[in-house]
Image 1 (cartoon, helix red, strand yellow):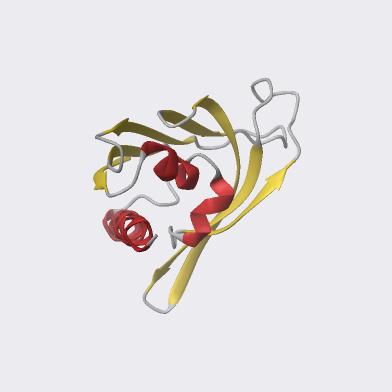
Image 2 (cartoon, rainbow, N blue to C red):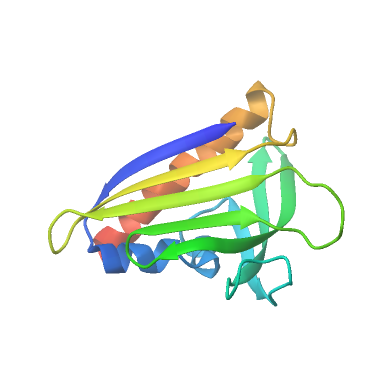
Length: 151
């Protein structure tokens, strides 16, 4: 499954990327990311790549669906490109999660951001859960836009 969002944002690329290239910032604008805590790097991580334990949480009626992931920042080109990849260290096989964000400055105080979430497992599949995940991403996109408009 893949979800792509493109946003025109009323902020510089520097300001925009300050909110998207550090997973610890995501709970402030992405409701799907319930928490994001830095964690030590592991030998399997790319060199000097920061890592986080994140908890994704979405509600389906009265029920909540959650998932904990260990994510690393595998690619980082400040103000332009960032890719986070799931990299668990428990020795088991896990479904891949990848979040890729690419920004383009559109003047001094505007940026175009494309974010792509790719998920290769079955926890969030099925019409209902896929719709919930897509809705959570759409809400997060709107929250990011509002956050940048306010500041």
